[in-house]
Amino acid sequence: MTENEIQAVLSRSVIEETDTSVRLHKGQDYPSGILPKQGGEQYRAIRIGASSLVKGSVVGNDVIIEAAEDINLSKSVKAPGTEIQGSVNSLGSVDIGTGTWIRGGIVALGDVTIGPYMTEINTPGHVLIDGGVSGANVVIGDGVVILGPVLAKEKITIGNNVTIRDHIAAPEVEMGDGCLIGGLQAQNKLQCGKFNTIAASQILIPLDNKQINLESDIRSPYPGCNSCPYDPIFDGNSEIARKLSCHLFATREGNKVTAGNCTDWTPFPLEKPENQYNLENFSCVSLIPNDAVNIRLYAEKSTIWERGGES
Amino acid sequence: MPKCCKSIHVGWICPVCGIPMIITSHIGNEPVPIGKIKNVTIVQGDYVKGSVIKDSVVMGDVPTDTSNEKIDAQGNVIAGNISEDSVILTDDLDI
Image (cartoon, rainbow over the protein chains, first blue to last red):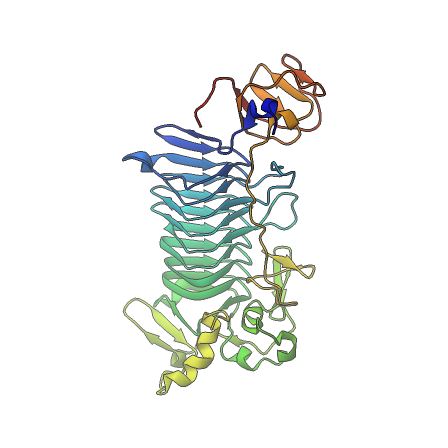
C-alpha cells in the first residue's frame, strides 16, 4: 500500500451509536458483538443493515435485522447474506429479515418475527437459526430452518415447509403445511395444516378436543419409518435425517404441499383414546403403548427420530 | 426452504441425495484503499461512487494526485460501478 493509498481507507466497522440507538450499515463487518458498555445501553434500539457481519452477539431493546441485499464486498465477491456469529437478545421485539444466518439463538421479552426462506430470488434467501427461539409471540415464515427449540409465552405461528429440529412449546400453536418439527407441546389450542411431521413419538396437545383443528393426519416417523419400504433409497449415514424430511411422504412445489408416493407412514392416533393419557394440563398422544413395561425396547427405536440422526 | 436436486425440501439434509444444506459464511468486508477505486465521484462531499465500496465511511483525505483516476468533487454521479450512501470524513480519526 503506497503513501497515497493510506491517506483514505474505508472503515472496517461502520456503526452509528447514540444513547438510544445503534445502526450498523449495509455490507459491513463489525468485529465484535453489539453489546451495552454501560448501564442503560441495553435499551437501545438496534438496526443491522442488509448483508452485514456481526462477530458476536447482539443485545438491545427492539432489534431489527434487515433482509439481505445484493451487495459487493471489498474482495469483489457477493455478500452471502447477513450473519450474526452469536445470539440476538432483546428486551423488546426482534424482527429477522430474509437472507439471515444466526449462529446462536433468539431470546426476546416481546414478539419475534422471522421472515421467510426464499429460493426464487436474486438476493440471499436463506433463513437459518442454529439455536433456539423464545418470545412472547413467535411468528416463523415459510421455509425457515431452526435447529433449536421454539418457545412462546402466548402463541407460535409457523408457515409452510418450516423445519424446527427441536421441540416447540406454547399455549397456542398454529402450523401451516409440510413442516418438520422435533416435538410438540400445545396447551390450549392447536391448529395444524397438511402433511406435517413430528419426530417425537409422544406429543402433548390440548385436553379440550374442540381446541384441536387438523387438516390432515400428522406423520410420526416411529414406527412406520423404522421399517421403511423404500429403505435402499435412504441407505447411508444420513438415513434418519433424510427420512425425517422424506420426499416420498410429501411433495413440495413452491409453497404447495401435496401427498407423496408413500402410504406406509404412521399417523399420530389423535382419535384413539387407547393411545392417549391425560396429564394436568395436556393430553399426551403416544405411539408407545400405554401398558408398555420395557420402555427401553421402544425408546431405542423411537428416540432415534427425536435425535435427528445424532448418536 | 432449502433447495437441492431441483426441488425444495424441509430438514437440513436433502432427502433425495443426502447432501447437507450449505450456507456460505460471510467473509467480512476489508478496508479498501481509496487510491484503488476508479472513477470516483464526490457529490457535495457526502457521497462516494466507486467500484467496490458501498455504504462505507471513508476516513482521511481522498488523494487528488493519483494520475490515472478521475475525481470530480462537484460533478454529478457517474454511472456504473456504484457505491451508495457513503460518507467521507476529512478530519483525522483516532481509530
